[in-house]
Length: 342
Image (cartoon, rainbow, N blue to C red; front, side, top):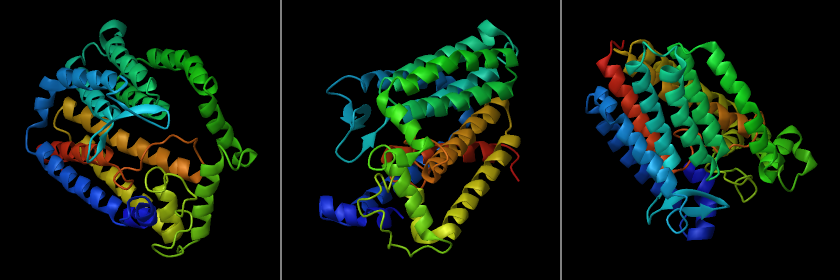
């Protein structure tokens, strides 16, 4: 699908139809290597580096905002650009924050129902991380990691009153972040009715739905997508699910969803059989991250959710995102082989 969705675009821009495929294959091989490395040590050692790891990720989030160091693309300054690949520090921060929260919950289980010792510290860290990611700006990633951390705290036994208060306090800020920023407000209006601005803010959603609708049950055939011919923006990243639907039809999209469901089912087994609290909450956070990113990406492609700009795990083109997905899988497998996994 990477080759199918990028070959014509790559030939037009880079005079090499295999440009994205070769890069993606290289990222995949490196990701597999990193996954095996993530399996090769005792995952409990992550508790000792959770705070330094988080500090490094926060430092990189600050660094990427400095002009001349971070790279600005389409008005967003989220990437470090290197010759061979780009790196998005918010992806590292997501992993670091999940590891830190799992470590915090396992260490402070006796205080988790208290406000100052159990609820406030992880919320302060999450809030500071969210502010740095919002400055890029990247509301989608902020909301995604925020939901994951809050669910982890909910499962750990944090009081309902704290979470409800957090939700109520967050509503005005979320409203301002969405409706005070013109392009975000336009996305919400396009989500509600994309045909109000079919050549502007509603263009992506309309083209995505055209792609999915054109595929029918069996698809128009692998490689025969018309929407990838410079109609659907980000066809190989945010909207690759739509190209799968166009070329492989309902059977292809349902088959892909079933694969994700099987993946999440195995993740739930790992969570259930984790040998300790740290492993339990670490695997919970990683599985939640995969689940949420998958639901958001597919929901956006189908027009069920506003545009967020999150890649489809394992499927979308991307260097650092694919490698962090593979590292997360390596950690999950590490926990699985340590626990009583059937």
